[in-house]
Length: 115
Image (tube, rainbow, N blue to C red):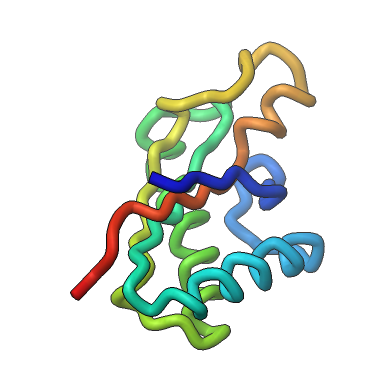
């Protein structure tokens, strides 16, 4: 499994992509575009602010926003799977604003080749 954690971060309670996310999205599109049999999971994550149910929904919206941007750039939807994990998989303790920002993220994982 190939994995890439990128610099696609979100403000608290937001699923809006900003222009700073574009270079990494272009990189992902470039790699996936060269490998039409590649299946990529876009994983959305949140900090611990809010309820677990709300965070799960927000992480799903974030993952879908990124997946939609990748598809809009020309990648087949069948190659992209969006999953929201909410606050279940933090990369840092949710004890400071900086650490919470690190947990509001997207991860890309190449999971398998499609037929």
